[in-house]
Image (cartoon, rainbow, N blue to C red; front, side, top):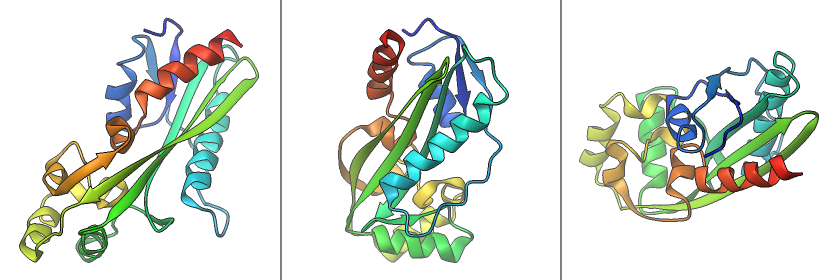
Length: 190
């Protein structure tokens, strides 16, 4: 368990739950920044870039000795990022795109404290079953897809669509906590 006070630069309820696995003294301080990506940014570069700018924004309003953790997660097919669905038709398009395929979930994480900073990313491969139209319609009729990257939440009803994963399950949820704990421990020792 990390003893330092942690500032989590995220409004995500999932990240809030997951960070509690590694630290008990956590303050939520969402970042307020422009999340526009530079053109032609790949998925891994995107999450690292976004986690860094979120961290930078929270550093400006925090004590320099605060341990700040920021993260960003994307779902990508062939290195093309799927955002959050804009509407039901967009969610349907995403589910059809993911059906029967392996895609990647990337989470970028930035850790900072006292003028030091590191950024890393984690990748998990996720395989969806071949989805029938009625499965897609049933899923997109729930409220679940609409505020999630790639239009699904593996920890929710979308778990029924997933054939398998290769990598960190919690990375798909939104925070690779096992690696993050180890990265924080190394960072604190620097």
